[in-house]
Figure 1 (cartoon, one colour):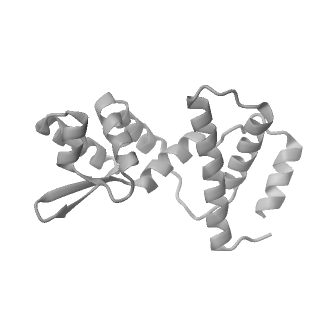
Figure 2 (cartoon, one colour; figure 1 turned 120 degrees about the horizontal axis):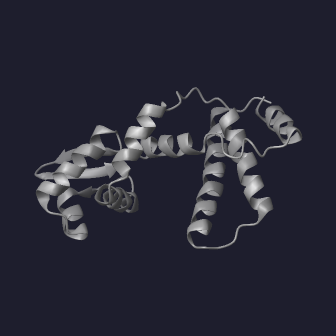
Length: 165
């Protein structure tokens, strides 16, 4: 069964919602049923079997991006920008909200921009920053690329192949 572009997009959004629910539930300390985990992994594996003509992130790129996120200040900036959404916020707002000195913030923003996680645009005298959500998704996709691949039964793999084909 071939999927149209809009069906593929809807499928990705649906899988993304499951993944978000899984992560939020895990972070909240809620117990997650084994069947829900396996359904999530099955759905996520199906997404990855579905080639959407996207080039996969290279190990070195993922390592460098994750290394930059390994700094607590940068991670705090990224989380703040994720909350701000695609429209982003002015640099001054980041500085005030997170109480980071201007020179330190500039240093960290340079690193985030260097790995493609940060986008900037100037409007008159304000420099606006926003997260590159596509890049953030690439990193999370890289980490979850083979989610549960060791635990999938052969019958599940056949179902996935039939669904994606």
